[in-house]
Length: 256
Image 1 (spheres, helix red, strand yellow):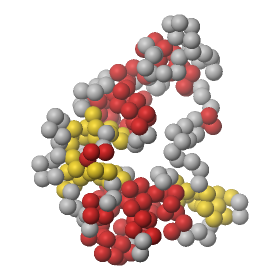
Image 2 (spheres, rainbow, N blue to C red):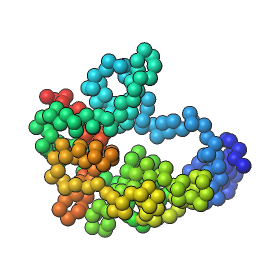
Image 3 (cartoon, one colour):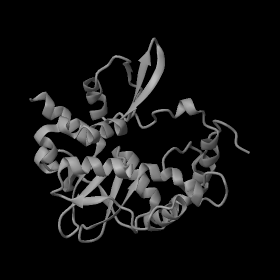
Image 4 (cartoon, helix red, strand yellow):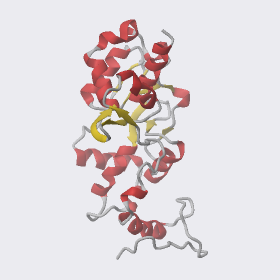
């Protein structure tokens, strides 16, 4: 039975809140507490997706700054009531359907436009990494995805924060189970892909010379938030997210 807000003592009698000090028994005890947590207490726990409202008569340009800061959805308010939700995905769809608004920038590469993160700034892991360590890295570094590369730096796969929600399918019961985090990244991904019916080798990557207009179209057609760019040998060169595109375009348009 779960008792809400019950303390979870560590071996010295202190309350444990760190994965670094928790043994598996403590982690499983905290699982119980997690299941009865109030939703309001974990809203925007990452502090990266705050509530941002815009009036019903706002212009598209008004959304550039919050979207460029990493906000994924904006509440559209009409007469003090929620009218619509405007998302990054919808903004990118708009660009794809109205590609002419990009002008000559549409034919340029991400590198030429200084959009996205180059390889030296990308945090990567190996398939042998423990899933719990990978998700801890996502949290501590404030990231939404990690690149999975081999010893030569070639891109193999990715692990995203959204994959965490699939852990429930891997659990031995219908309840969320932290034991699922103890397997390797390779094993976790294989289970997630089997459950979600994703292709075994599903990974959206394109050549580093791909123009921006094609990257946008690939995002829309595959319903994804980021595209990995590789060189001719498959070595990771850059990652471009929706946030990167909107932030980059905002910067470019501000100077025009």
